[in-house]
Length: 255
Image 1 (tube, one colour):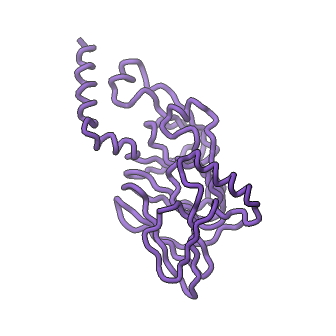
Image 2 (cartoon, one colour; image 1 turned 90 degrees about the horizontal axis):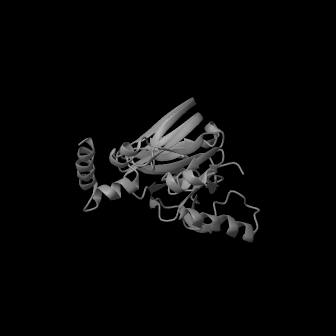
Image 3 (spheres, one colour; image 1 turned 180 degrees about the vertical axis):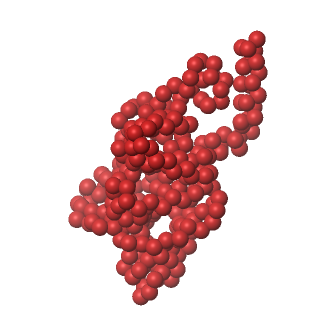
């Protein structure tokens, strides 16, 4: 199924939303609860799955939608369709502060791997499924999770990230990244985990025990403030307490 061709506008700076403009009979799919506002003429319906395979049987739809539970998402997605005579707008907001990344799937080989809570909305025709990380250790330790999301199609998709977004293009190169900071990457990129250094650096360096590594040729999208880091900083015993304890123990080892 070819994806609908939708127009859009990103609104805001640090806490963004995406406004989608739909022609008559065009549809955009979104995670349940992501809608911020919609104009008169937009009708919405909650359905099993993404609607990318109209001829799919009910059991196939149920199995496909049920697999999304493994990523922590709802088995239902909301379909917003312009049933008016002219152009109508509907907007979607991310669940936490950060940026919204518009991606034309057709321009990157029609496939994209996304962190499990990164998908926001997409043109109808986009297939949203799960992606199992081939390396169990990378998934369990790396902060991105063993089960990720895979987007497939030839239309526009929108993902959200915490903080500032950095887009890196690798040319048979390796990039070492703080775990949890990977938002999305092209599927030909190899994702793995390695230790962050010697024992002292691992325990007292503040970078954690492991780093994520991305190797290959293609694009990688990173986020400067993963939601888990934001929660840690806002906790009563946040970053300052941990920094002080590492400094004291580090000075002791320097002896």
